Amino acid sequence: MEEQIQTLLNEINAYDASDKQALEAFRMKYISRKGVVSGLFEELKKVPVTEKKKVGKILNQLKQTAEAKLAEFTQKLDSHASPRVEIDLTLPPVPNQIGNLHPLSLTQYRIIEIFERLGFNVADGPEIEDDWHNFSALNFPENHPAREMQDTFFIEKKGHAGSSQDMLLRTHTSNVQIRMMENQKPPIRAIMPGRVYRNEAISARAHCFFHQVEGLYVDKNVGFADLKQTLYHFAKEMYGRDIKMRFRPSFFPFTEPSAEIDISCLICNGAGCNVCKYSGWVEIAGSGMVHPNVLRNCNIDPEEFTGFAFGMGIERVTMLRYQINDLRLFSENDVRFLRQFQSVI
Ligand code: DAH
Image 1 (tube, rainbow, N blue to C red):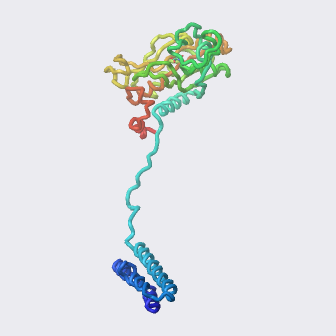
Image 2 (image 1 turned 90 degrees about the vertical axis):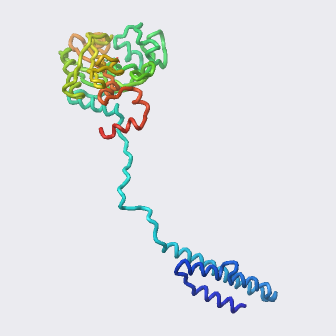
């Protein structure tokens, strides 16, 4: 029996399975339950006890050799099998999804571009503000209704009602005007974009937070004609030469005289829609000549310097620019809306 095992060992070592059939034949012959190796294990039972240990050992070696050989053949055949094409280099590439700027950012950058060419700097100020910079310094009387809870998100109430130290979320970007004039001597020519907050019900036209760009120009001999011409220029640059614009007399505590600025509605072209409240005009900004009290509050002599200011709603300007009729779209982050601005960059 030892000889027989040796012969089989030689046979197995010399075997070469070049295809699947040869491999199967090898398995059947040596490894399957009816194969020769199994047969020899049956015969082992008949071997005399004295021999059993020795023969059993070489028989086990034979079995292991056969199994190792089978594994080797299987691997060889698998690696030779026709390769599976996982990457087809001839396919066009799947483009990466690239992000895009938010429409409000696009508009803000455009506004900055237009005013920069007129010599305006860009400035920034805090969103968490004290009452002085948001209201008192801007000539709001102590009992002015805009300070009350329904409009303003107060953070901290200190001292008496309307105290200059009360902390709040700024209700407009006009606070930055004050900060600029407190820290800089005229001439000052700057725009100040940023986010503002108001305690208002959310609708297609209003939100509890939105964006404004403040404008301020203080120098010797600045007049209302400068304000008008600057804003006319802005409207034409932003919307094209055919845009219609009008100044409506208005009131703000921090300007005298004051005007609101309307643009002909580009969403309905005057036919009437929810954005222009069926009037054909959309208000985009408040403006006016800086009130002498405001200049004085910032230690600027109103006898020597005059200035104009405006505060523009970036949402409104954007809605007219892209014909968007619901302000809530800007903060819902629906990618189907946002992706539409991809090609605009
Ligand atoms: N701050 C005003 C508002 O939020 C807008 C405004 C009006 C700003 C007139 C100005 C201005 O600078 O001169 O409604």
